[in-house]
Image 1 (cartoon, rainbow over the protein chains, first blue to last red):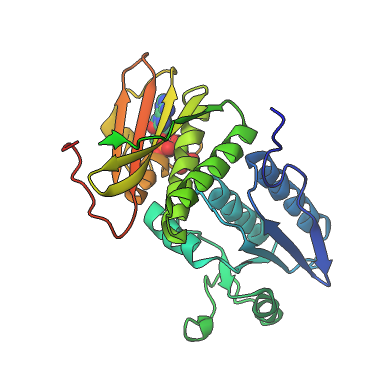
Image 2 (tube, rainbow over the protein chains, first blue to last red):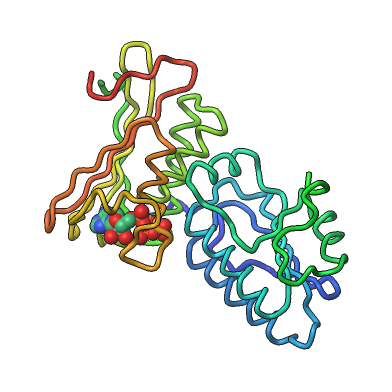
Length: 141
Length: 148
Ligand SMILES: Nc1ncnc2c1ncn2[C@@H]1O[C@H](COP(=O)(O)OP(=O)(O)OP(=O)(O)O)[C@@H](O)[C@H]1O
Ligand SMILES: [Mg+2]
C-alpha cells in the first residue's frame, strides 16, 4: 500500500532532565512502539539504579486514543519503575480519553497523574511517600 | 437499519500492528465525516482498537468493514470485525470483565460493549468470529436494537 501508516513506527525519544526521564507521546502509537518504549525505559532506569532516576514523566497530551493495550503498557512501566525505586507520573490526559477509559473499565494502578509536565516535575521533587499510592487528594485537582 | 444511500462500505485488512493503526485512522475519518463529536469519536475508535486487536491476536487476522448506516432520521456508523479463526467457545465467559485466555486485561470485549450503542457477536467454535458494533450520532433518537 502506498499510503503511509499514520503516527509512529519510529522509537519514542526519552529525555533526561536531571534525575527524571521525560517521555512525550504523540499521535497513534503502534503496539510494538509502545512495547519498545517500555523496555527502553525500564533499561534506562535500571542502568542508573542507585537512585539516579527517581521519576518518569509520560506526557500523553498529544495522544488521542488510549486502549487497553497502551493502558497496560503504561501500567507495566509504572510497576517496573516502582520496583526500581522510581515514580511514574502521567500528564496531560485529554478529557475524551479519560471519559473513555472509565467506560472501558481501565484503571491505571501505580500511575500518579498531574495536569501538566510542570506539575509532574513539582510532584516528583517532593518526598516519595514510599508505598503510598497517591499524593494529597485535595491538591490533586 | 439501512446502509446510507450513496455511501459504500470500506473494507480494511487486519493482519498486522500497522493495520490496527490504519484501522483506527480510518474509523476516525469516517466518524468525523459523519459529524461525530470528539468524545463519541474517541469511544468508537477505542472500541474499534480493542476489537481489531482481538481479530488479529485471537482470530489470526481478518478484516474490518466500515459502513455508514441510517435508521429513519438517525445516522450512524457500523463496524464489523470479521475473522475465520477458532471462534469463541464460551461467549458469556469471554464477555466477562477480566476474563482472558491470553496475557491481556480481559477488558476488550466487555469494555468495547460499554463504549458503543449496539454490540453483537456471531461466533461458532471453529467457525470464526464476527463482532458488529453500531454507534449512532448523538442528538438523534437512538433506534432500539432489533427494530431494523
Ligand atoms: N476474535 C476472536 N476470536 C477468538 N477468540 C476471541 C476473539 N475475541 C475475543 N476472544 C476471546 O475472548 C477473550 C476475551 O477477550 P477480551 O478482548 O475481552 O480480552 P483479551 O483480548 O484477552 O485481553 P485485552 O483485550 O484486555 O488485552 C479472549 O481472551 C479470547 O479468548
Ligand atoms: Mg482483547
